[in-house]
Amino acid sequence: MEDSCSVSSPRRIVSLSKRRQASVSFEDPDDKSSRFGEPGEHGPKPSEVYGFVGSITTIVATAVFLVWAYVPETWLHSIGIFYYPSRYWALAIPTYAMVTIVLALGFYIGLNFMSTPPPTSLNTIFDEFSREPSSFEPSMEGDDQPIEPYSDIGIDRINHLMFNDVK
Image (cartoon, rainbow, N blue to C red):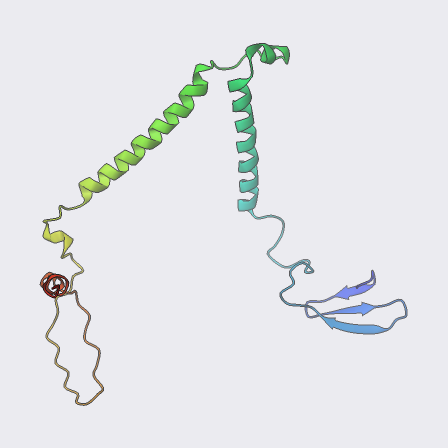
């Protein structure tokens, strides 16, 4: 569409053909593929670089671990690798990691149970942000009634609505 003799500006692209006829076409503001030199966009973002390096490192580490864990010692010796950790650690490290994760989850659940008040405690119903219903009597007549101030619904009213109307 454009030839090598085009001039780019932020608002329009002026295409100069070989016959020196000028034609004006406007850019699509949603088309980000044709924009060059926008301020603030110089190269990849650091998070993209860290993600790429992290994914490549993970793949390489997994490949090295699997080679170390499953390739026989004679093959490792034939390619010149003589020093490596004991095969015991091929099972011990993942097992220790899994046990650590399970214990951490168990500890987290236990800590939440310990910090939660018992069901019979009034702290499960009222706290420092609770609001008692106030007596609100609007002085306006007619259909225009102001909105009542918000408050917590009492446990007696909740129980009455949930359990007394059931037949």
